[in-house]
Length: 376
Image (tube, rainbow, N blue to C red):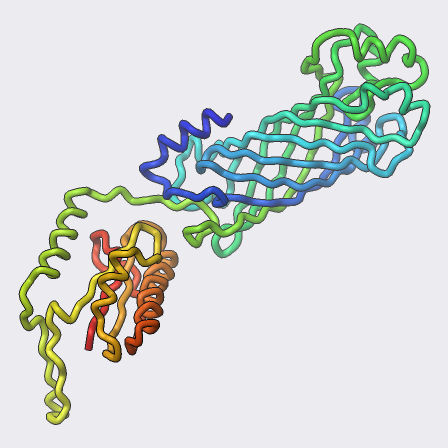
């Protein structure tokens, strides 16, 4: 699963924005009922359970999750005399089937289907001495879980998810020739206590290698609620990077360099005729300071600070922040305002008077990750 996630990450690197180590992390709670897969009575032999799940999506398709569940009832197994009959902790690989086959469009679908599979470790508790002695070596075992999640994403940024999850869970007890023991020595019931204590325990613990045995499994139906934490890019989910033409980027850089190198000249001149006494300054290229930013970032580089250091103390300026077309309008509006604010705060720290700092979002159709300082 890790190898598949790594390959998927490299394949999607051109379309999905880069994420940091703690991006795309989620936490959730779940609960439901379980019962033996075979030899049970439907709707009567139900064992309630509750648990938590913490996970991370490495790509819109692949992820990993750690899950822990506690089982509270003794039905339909022999009583162990404890409130919590067993606990099971699992490491699960997750595959978003909707994104795998339908592609990722920039935000989660309202309804998604995911597959989960992994291994775990179960411990059965007991306060019954006879049960404890008979099952001393068999109350801990490896488990395996296979499940499907039918999920609904909701919230203003689809940061919440509600899912319904049917699953089948196996406990690796080894193979046994004693059919009655197999039926009673289920995933949550290590061995029979009475009739099979002498022969059955040995059969279950020594009969061979662990195997997926339908008689040694239980089915489970849970529902859960998940919260996806906010990422470094300001959203709660993966974002799509719109591929940019390198020629377009080179043309924009050439345009910026040409403006920087151009000799001072009058660009605009506006006179308010209604108020003849008011003089409006003629703006020239020398009055403009361009600050560039990395994609999705609002931090000042050394080069940006060096450019801002040319603005003299005590002058009045106006700062306008912009963003490139990648991402949603909401994200770009926030990002452009953050760029304007970081430039304004740096200038204020140097004694420059900032009259206005405004984020304009996306301006035009070319990459425009800038903050422009207008010196009045």
